[in-house]
Image (tube, rainbow, N blue to C red; front, side, top):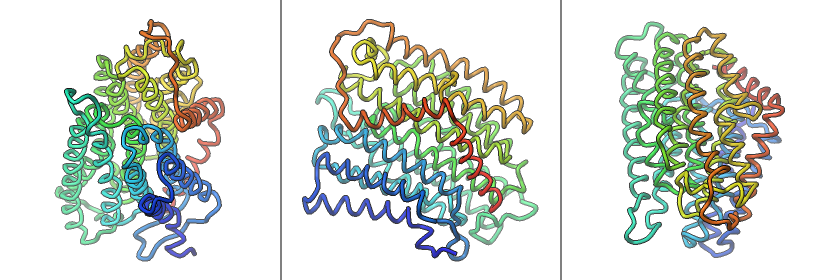
Length: 478
């Protein structure tokens, strides 16, 4: 049996990395772009160590349990963090050259919280880890608070404020709900739910789900998504759009399938309603958007709806396909945002019309964006196609035929706005023929995302096997 230090090796390494980044910057040993490459290298090293170091086990009192389930999520978080840092290096060096260390450290602290969430089996630990994940994000969302001309509207502070207010509201919902649940059970263990929950316990459960729904950006808790995505720095939004959602999925899975697995009838209906509303609202509200960041924001709301379909199935196959979906979403959505960032840096805006002629200016960026959009739309045979197909199959086998039919219909609707962006990229005439010059870190990050979307799209079996292994481990140990 591993000691608790061994079980938390990867988490502690990331937290220590944040301290190292701040110390190196303070003493002037490493600074500038080198600090970003060092941070990305650190995350790559921790990711590599996850395949070598045995971190399975349980910490004292069973408040934290680690295994294949936790390891799957940790690798997703580490990959998302590494790619987001690579995509941020040159933007940070140009816009905030004196605050790069703080940006990287906050990202690492947020990652530390995310990595603890999947293994938490105690309400207090889950809540603390969730807040450690969220609080650095409030600061990062307002990072570009002075960007733009003096006369321009400053969207950075607004983005940070909206994320903070909704995040605080979600915490209040969660804590109030936990007060009802813990008061009923008399224990902070997530698994300690009475055999016959009272109405107060039921209300508490719904409030906890609502609090987690804010972090997921699911309807009706999605109001922060489009404005925050539009105002926050795009390299950070690339990270915000994927990693915290994976953390929210991990927390919701632990709560519903560990503590409340015997009471699926109490929460499955709520999950189904949220999933249906998210798919409808996300796809419908994305249609009229002209800012690509807002479009991808509402698209993300819809994508979370697909994930919740699989989670609502409550089966091992459903959980595995939810994991598979969120892993594919990391590569696809992060890659799309980084391409939009590269194009916006050259054209001066994030509107769809600013992407006009991108395929002729820089063919590889135009082709990459097209692949990412097709993956989000679920077109064969890129990675997103398998994600949607496997989710629908798992939900259909679980008897959720109505949600599957709705999901297929709105997925076809979503194809329209994705192709609107692709049409501007490939068919519209641009205002300039000057190539878009993406810096090295951004190129590497986009290339990794593209390789994953295409490669795993052609052969998804390795990722499917890992997701099945993680789901099996989770459901056996709950």
